[in-house]
Image (cartoon, rainbow, N blue to C red; front, side, top):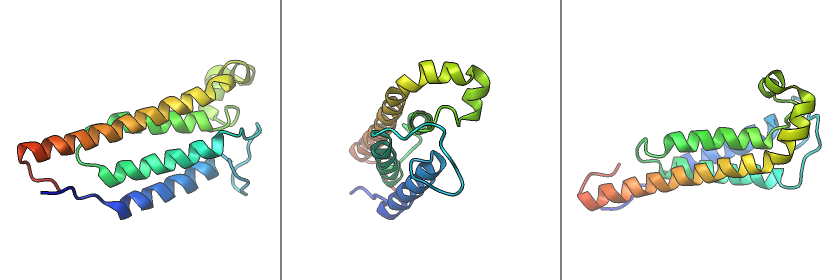
Length: 140
């Protein structure tokens, strides 16, 4: 019995994630979204890593194991990459000065925590698949 990965599904979700997150967070210039703070050096690599990990998650997805962690990781990464002033929910909750003073400096760590959670979700799915193989379950 062997693993049945879905590389085309993973590639599609990775490309969709890269294009949508990069555009919505305005990591690159686009006519739909403008950014109120400058793009940091780490943000483009973070978008790229988020897209790669999302693609891997969907390529190896086996069960719901790790899906919650991966979802929370994706949201945290998005919030960490996005402009803090442009995020309407955060702006309503905390206000602009508070966001720039306290949240902006920790954004890289929020994005990193999200990427780590997404990676843990991937590991959980791979572990579930290996357990299923070891116990003789049919792996889709």
